[in-house]
Image 1 (cartoon, helix red, strand yellow):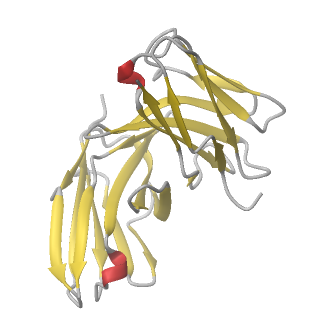
Image 2 (spheres, chains in turn cyan, purple):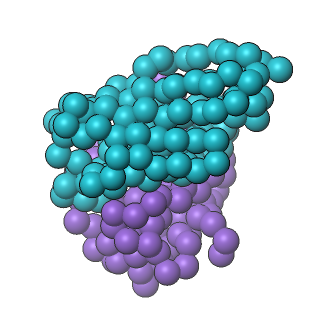
Image 3 (cartoon, chains in turn purple, yellow):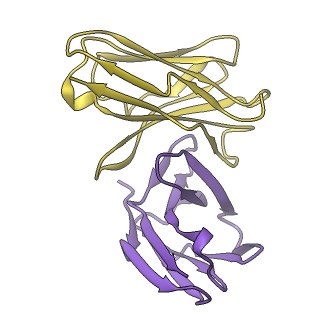
Length: 112
Length: 113
């Protein structure tokens, strides 16, 4: 059974810092991995989608890497801003497709 | 529409009543998903539709829960004889294809008194 773990559960940093959020999964037979952002009381917004054949994806100040063999992904946020404050979730889709398994999320707070 | 639309945004009901939650996916998206988010529980998969059929309904918690999708578009999640433990935010998502990027709605917050 696939399990997804995110560390740390919460993180508080001053504005301008570069930071890394970690995601690990127990079954390496995945089709893709997605990172999402969730603001309080809102739905999820997709940030990056990495296919299993890819090593990383970049969008603006965000970079996500995937090491399928070790069951790890990281989300790197450069030059953090207060507007980045949110909960970040990673999710993996198995080779059967159709169902994403989510981690518990990392709650990020960026202080001005 | 521009995004995934869910209604109602908030629903308060009494224990034992039936509720229906609606999801209107992005036009042209063939795949539709229902998730449940409870306080401290994370996101829990409920059911997935490809077109009008549900290849995976393994996450439905009990036979009180059912869902359907018609015309390859709108989906309805029905909870019969609601219980207090059904209180949660029910999130719907859609994607162009089964393995594509997911777009989520804002959710329907259900409170069972």
